[in-house]
Amino acid sequence: MAHSTSSSTPQRKRTSVTSPGRPVPVGPVLSELGAQIQGLRVRRALTLEELGRKAEISPGLLSQLERGLGNPSFSTLHKLAYALDVPISTFFQGSGSQNGAVVRRHERKRLMLPTRQLVYELVTPDLNRAFEMVWVEFSPGASTEKHPYVHQGEECGLVLDGELEVHVGDEVFTLQPGDSITFQSTVPHWHRNPGTKRTKTIWTVVPPSF
Image 1: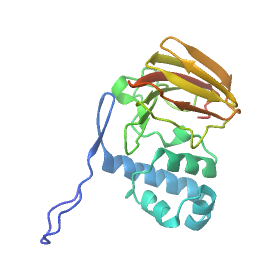
Image 2: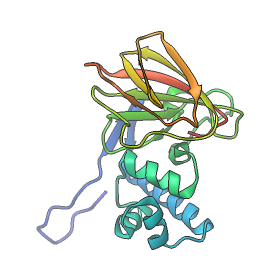
Image 3: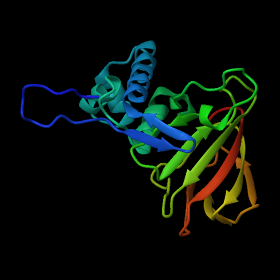
Image 4: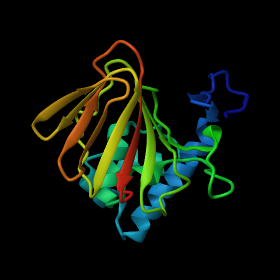
């Protein structure tokens, strides 16, 4: 992204993030995400300082994100979604389905993260449906324990490959390929991959609130 200058100082380049299907250029994606965060903040009449305080992140970091200069972690996006009162899937990026019915694998909107420990892709065309389906991958050891999900509705998760530990309230369930789990999304819940291979899952949420 950076171009050569007369300075001898090396210029930093933005790389591509590889997602299932194809590499995605980071620069445009982060710019789109930054504009989205800024738009939500402005519509809620919040200053950088006010949103930073609600989301428990520094105004400086928030300013960088809005200008497309930072690559936010899942934790940061989780905090911003909560502070802005929107589903995390609001931050999924990409062109999405071109015909409104079929979503090709390479067309899925996805949540871009600095690492591929967690991969989230929207399987349904958009969030303007009665339900949403999300493809989620967990690398070995990946966990969302630090920020349990709490949102409206009900959800069902199906493990396609690997192993997944699902914590719902005080209960713990270990799922193998072919196993599924259904619960109320209003109960705090989080996930962990306790295995040594990548875990692939698919989730349905009614109504769209993840």
